[in-house]
Length: 279
Ligand code: C2E
Ligand code: MG
Ligand code: MG
Ligand code: MG
Image 1 (tube, helix red, strand yellow):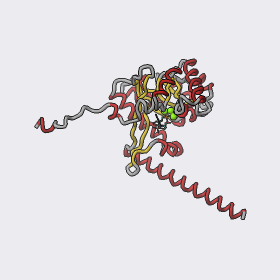
Image 2 (image 1 turned 180 degrees about the vertical axis):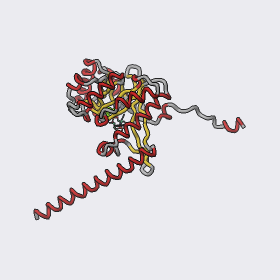
Image 3 (image 1 turned 90 degrees about the horizontal axis):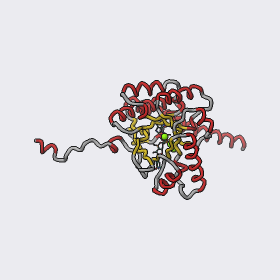
Image 4 (image 1 turned 30 degrees about the horizontal axis):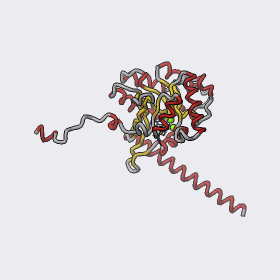
């Protein structure tokens, strides 16, 4: 019986493994093709200053316009991209698109997400080269780094972050508070700002724990002279609460969901009777 149970257990494990491997291979192959054919899109979510709700820029968020499956969110492919090393190519494609966006629109800052894995010594030079090629000041770009992707003591990553900061590109710690939040990171790394994960925003203002965490993180930001942005702000009550705590900037569905460039910068409309009128 034990043997049979063991066998069954083993078979279940194998099936799960096989499904995982098949998904990984399918997504990996599809993603390689997507990169070649240019199926990746960038959606832009506005970032506003809480004091006056003016838009100061956008966060760039990758999407995949899959020919059969429709528009895919990062959660449906980024883990595989990380595992097979394609995330570097994804981030490079997003960066290139964002540089074009910045060149097309003369105002505001755009932040791009990056995995620490991408900070392999080639990222800062690519950013410097890209900015120069498009004639853009480095202050128009920011880099969001997932705190959870940081490997403590990784010298290459740290060097690369310092190179970005020296260049004038602000480094933001993304989803601050969800990882191990080593406060020594703030001392060691050239961090310019903190972003509060939306998991701490969703239950505001009622939830006392979220309230204390949000207050503590903005306290850190102020104490270290860093910028502070909270994400996932969906209600006016949340915005008011966070503003009162001292948060400088915010993003979320209250201010605008991620959307394509044309949504924020519609091209001049062609009059409906334009063709007839000129004929
Ligand atoms: P993130 O950087 O923390 O991005 C914020 C996420 O919260 C986005 O999800 C955004 O759509 C979502 N969000 C913003 N406001 C609201 C709101 O009011 N309500 C709700 N329910 N959600 C909101 P998204 O676009 O699915 O991105 C998920 C994660 O994928 C990002 O989290 C980021 O870690 C990663 N990611 C996105 N684009 C890239 C990329 O180009 N490169 C890399 N390496 N990672 C990326
Ligand atoms: Mg982000
Ligand atoms: Mg975030
Ligand atoms: Mg988040």
